[in-house]
Image (cartoon, rainbow over all chains, first blue to last red; front, side):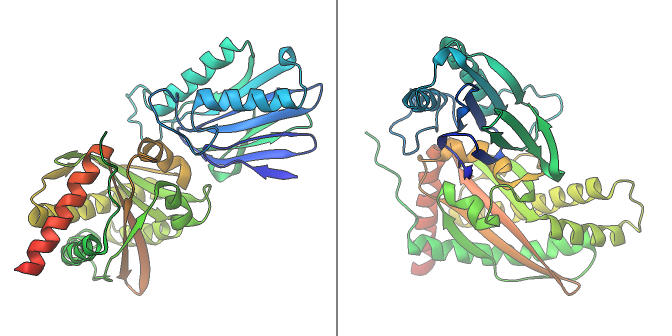
Length: 158
Length: 213
């Protein structure tokens, strides 16, 4: 089954499902995967942290709530935390002048996700982040393969 | 605790329509100079949308490629102004530009993007001047930056900043007729949370003063 995650959403599933998320700009898609159980989750994160913000109508709007959501969901599927690996895609700055350093929400999202994964001791085994390009992702739960799709149908595995 | 910003009323909406009608006449004249041909501009429409409704309204799907031009707003109102159009319309405009430049183009797409940035400059100038004249708000825009990418990728950084903090996003739909072809150009006015009330309040006050005069 093909499952689609929209902005601020998150899905946990297992093989043979494929999880999609389309149109990432500054948003970041994080996948966490357990190859033993062929189980994983993907969240489409919009902002770096929930501390400065009030209540939230979607579970994965913020990096901290999104990582917690994925880990709780995977725990419920009886995966072992020590066998989990993560991949990160997105965090672009779409309207960047050539000489400008990426300091926007995209860069903050990437930094926040990396710190949270490090705190949880989950290694990042694949990454396609930054730049000024939009991305869609396809997460195949059979092998944990994450494919990045860009404009013009350009595909890249991470 | 600060009161939650009010949604745009029908009265404010009527005033915005009048404002757009005034701006549209000037926009057509300015575009004729750039494209060197007759430009017919239909009555612009205004839509008021929530942040999560914008991409579905414009293209129906988050991954549809579009041309997006972004300008920052500075002055009495801060925020972002986007101009969005389809790839089909970019293609049509690049043909018109080719006629203007007598075929001397090294890179058709880059040239067309420059033209779209220029058209965005004109539209932004015209509408911001109309807002200035009727609402006494001085709003300036920065230099336009144009990209081609997926609609949601282009807008997400701006939309996540305002999502849940401002109630409405203003979408102006401009339809042009040039040489028996039609073009649709969307303009998105996305004020920052602090500027939304100032803008909505000015629309309200200006609308009332027009109707009472």
